[in-house]
Length: 222
Image (cartoon, rainbow, N blue to C red; front, side, top):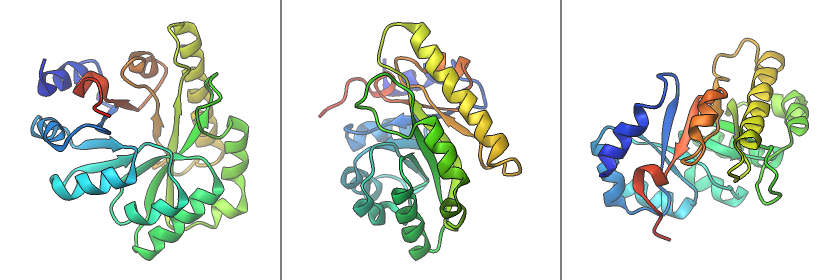
């Protein structure tokens, strides 16, 4: 099927309250344009240089999300335009985002990346660390970042019980943080979990944002 047909099929499976991030990393501009022409506006990239190049070559009303591991020295390159950074995994990175956002006279939306998967190679804070960070005075002093929720990935396994349990843990943490740290802030509303192979389970467990690449664009061109 075409990119446009893939998008239609996926959107038919998503509730209205779930945002689809089309993961366009490693895919060429012309393929992203196909998705854009089919109505998709939210795209996810994981490499700063690639993102900056594509942004200049594609329509200006695209909402770019950064979904990969972000080095502090690269924040300045995306700070002027990025819509949402999914992968914040330290106070150090938060401070740099706040600093660069201030230089650009804007507030940058971010998600905390949470590690619940069994693979040690995946990034993120533990649930306990996230609570400590968000209750810290250092975090509360930041004025140019807006904490919009959390992001996490489940273990890459065919065992649906494991995947569902991990998504359930993320949802429980999301609810806990919303109640304890952001009780009067409706902007804390995003639970970003679920990719091409497991997004249906993620939605069943409360995801409000899914990151789908392969099911839209096919295998990546590395």
